[in-house]
Image (cartoon, rainbow, N blue to C red; front, side, top):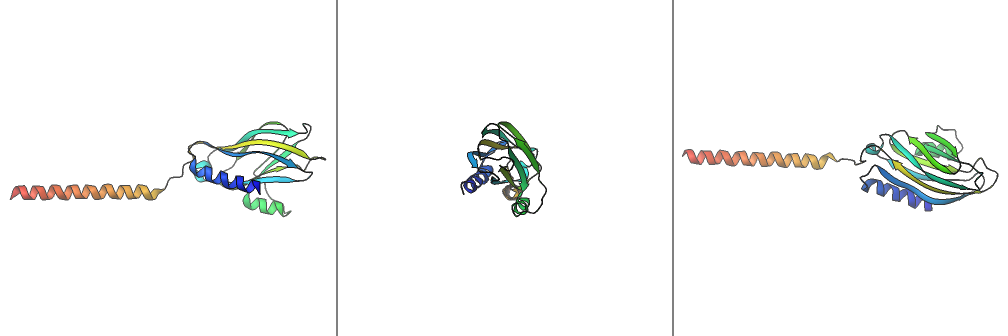
Length: 170
């Protein structure tokens, strides 16, 4: 359930941060043979342009390799129930830097899997979600309200000027 807390933290941070990256994961995972861990995250429309997950991984023992599998949240539900599904990205790696391209916005799941080893592994991972732009979602309602106030203020100024001209003519 530690991963669930991390996922909620990521969702909150993605709403607050205005930079072009968001921390996704910084943890050490102990994976038995055939076991996996996952993190769920959401990419909004403003973050979906050229989004990537990148970071550093340290796998112990150093001869082992782990899999990164990127799925949609619906694809993850199918995958975890044993049904075939399309992956968005797949990478098998040992220690070092990694990078996965995220195709578009929506709800995603990143899996770290120990399916290909015959012994347990320990995986230290630091990952972030990077994207082009600032990632800010704009709300049109405040802008419309400001426009309405400007128009209303302009109408009041025009009405006051018309009344002043009318009094001066008398």
